[in-house]
Length: 335
Ligand SMILES: NC(=O)c1ccc[n+]([C@@H]2O[C@H](COP(=O)([O-])OP(=O)(O)OC[C@H]3O[C@@H](n4cnc5c(N)ncnc54)[C@H](O)[C@@H]3O)[C@@H](O)[C@H]2O)c1
Image (cartoon, rainbow, N blue to C red; front, side, top):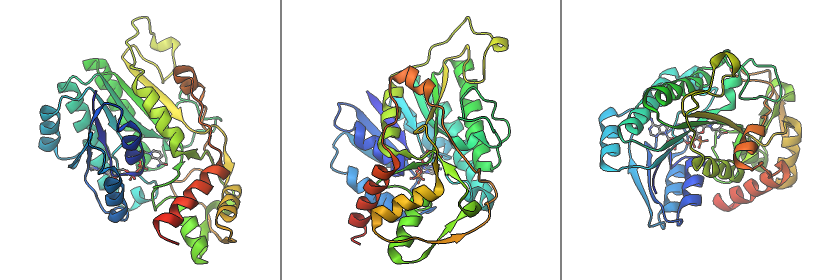
């Protein structure tokens, strides 16, 4: 198959490309290599893929309408894994416009490319942040998610709505994946585990929000990749029997699907910090802070729908996952 991976220089995109390389596919990856975080880490991920002969990289911005259209004309992609986006909840309070460009205009350009290129399946990244003010746990795709609390979350919810429209109008099969706090080797420097590890190894304090009273459904990168790869082969089909009045928000008469990918068990933030202490062999200096605007106190994924569809349950626990991250971090930064 010919595959497009957007955001290939990113944390998850790099891991997906690594996994799919060498399996007989032709892979084209795009990324704009923006400087939201250390560009040398993005470049290092691309360097790590440089030896894969079946992986080609094109530097391209999702918001470049002509460039994206030309990409889809040049390559006849069978399937698309769309992971490029402006990520981060807190940054969406500082720089909202970049979220509109990358996540709204960019997503539209991907949908248009898939529509005109007659792509057989678009799999795209959504986020657990769409659950916003939802209090029903574990978070299920059948829950209503109409109360986002950050612009980032609103753009991810918008991606699901836009995708449904294209699935309905143009019969483009789309699958949205709501990722729950992904971590592991090569992860993002703006995320808690990276920041905690860096600070703990440097003997510096770590900011612990909501005075430590937080829970996250931390999901190891290999589990996320396994979910993406399995879902890629499960192409949603139209369902003419479907009735809106008898169904939830996660199904449709259109070829449209939505899954959570999370570990399925929330971990208290202080337990996560203890795992970082164990893996580094150092004590954390905690600087307790109030809740950050845009953040939610707890996430917890209901992963039954993913299990029913793919037969897969994420399996790497937090102690093992954090240990693997710290090993990678020490090797990468030679600490
Ligand atoms: N990591 C997580 O915990 C998590 C959780 C939920 C959802 N997600 C989503 O998963 C996807 C991948 O996240 P990640 O953690 O790998 O983030 P990342 O920032 O490491 O990767 C995203 C990549 O997309 C690229 N990109 C951003 N805007 C672009 C644009 N306009 N044009 C081209 N490339 C662009 C960036 O340069 C980056 O390399 C994103 O859509 C993110 O919103 C991630």
